[in-house]
Length: 214
Image (cartoon, rainbow, N blue to C red; front, side, top):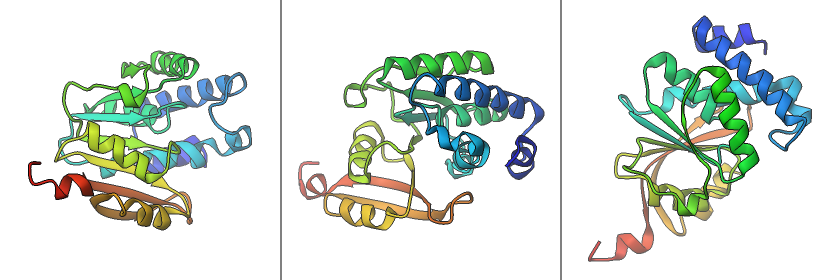
């Protein structure tokens, strides 16, 4: 996929496309120095990574004001979402990445893109937010049960979790159901026939559900 094909497929403005082209250049440069994306996927950057992340954007709830991306590493999807959010006038995006080198990449790429997301260089387990975000996302970070634990702690009753998953999505859902209650919608990926986006709401641990004091 070319940048122009991406712009047509996702109906983005020239300004947003220019920001994403800057992101692509910075990502390629930094990938030569630190482990951001697999070098073998660089030739497919627009389809394999940028378009794959952009398809999360329409799945946000209407009027969302805050979006937190966990394990933001390569800016996928966080910086792609931040570029789309800038065009739409929000939501505010927070990128969480404990690796200092990757956090430095995020800061550099955001600055060159003309964006100002909040960058939290800390572990997810220690993260404290001023309020539950409307959206929590994570891509290629951890198995679903671990992601649900993060989402349950950081989110609220109205939070939507967006987790792209590969061919093992159903088995991860089965494993997660042993400890978690949730409502899930499975959305077929537009970029990978074997992948699925899990849109989860009302995330609650089974232990909490059984606690009469909760």
